Amino acid sequence: MKTALTIAGSDSSGGAGIQADLKTFSALGVYGMSAIVSVTAQNTQGVDDVEDLSPKIIGGQINAIFRDIPVGAVKIGMVSNSAAIRTIAEKLKEFRPKYVVLDPVMVSKSGFDLLKPEARETLIRELLPLATVVTPNLFETERLVGRKVETLEAMRQAAKEIFDMGPESVLVKGGHLEEGPIDIFYDGTQFHQFAGKRIDTNNTHGTGCTLSSAIAAYLAKGLSLADAIQEAKTYIQGAIEHSLPLGHGHGPTHHFYRWFPEGE
Ligand SMILES: Nc1ncnc2c1ncn2[C@@H]1O[C@H](COP(=O)(O)OP(=O)(O)OP(=O)(O)O)[C@@H](O)[C@H]1O
Ligand SMILES: Cc1ncc(COP(=O)(O)O)c(N)n1
Image (cartoon, rainbow, N blue to C red):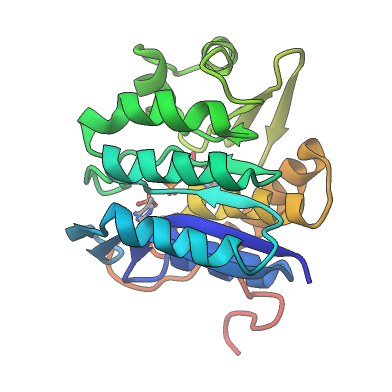
């Protein structure tokens, strides 16, 4: 059985974070494992509270997994603060997983800081250079390059600049792009465009988490990076198309619609 590990925050409402990642791994037939960095009290409307776990237990979870079970790919999501980031970076250098998909989560859809603003520099310095691919959305891209990014051309330019920060490749996500949900990939030599079809829905809680964990799952299954991203894009498109009208805010995507179509 292929395996994948998510290092991220817990979302009590199950639409984003660790819960979205484990659902994605399961739906794609990959055995999922988790190291929880932070626990959030949140629902589809917003984040009420956050409690970070200590570096000791974050490192302890990662140790326990790597010392016992082969890890096919790692996905990193909400990392919250500088101490947690340093611990995760240390562990990645110690255990050297083959693939690291880094979703540089900064602010929730509802506007809550999931990464302390003063930890942004630590994330750039410590984690970006360890990533096989880093997957910022437009907002995160703007924070990384320090200016507005609103067009495909600006996404390409930003992808180059983020590449220079040390990751093996960059996928700038255009979920919030006016022209449509088009993502730009750059691997240091070539650009590639991954285009989706915009679904008109409010239920997009956790789309970024789902995309990055699907990329990790497909890498664990042995696909090339370009194929893993293409398949992950198809996966997120289906999960948004069948998203669930749960809660009063942004509802979650649906990972198991093939098995349990709505209405059943
Ligand atoms: N309404 C939509 N219809 C189709 N695809 C979408 C839609 N919204 C986002 N996507 C796609 O979903 C993926 C996630 O992109 P997005 O830019 O929304 O990430 P994100 O902002 O990090 O998500 P989140 O913060 O909700 O986890 C991308 O591949 C994007 O193109
Ligand atoms: C624990 C956790 N991780 C990530 C997100 C980002 O998802 P979104 O941008 O849809 O709020 C979140 N809300 N919670």
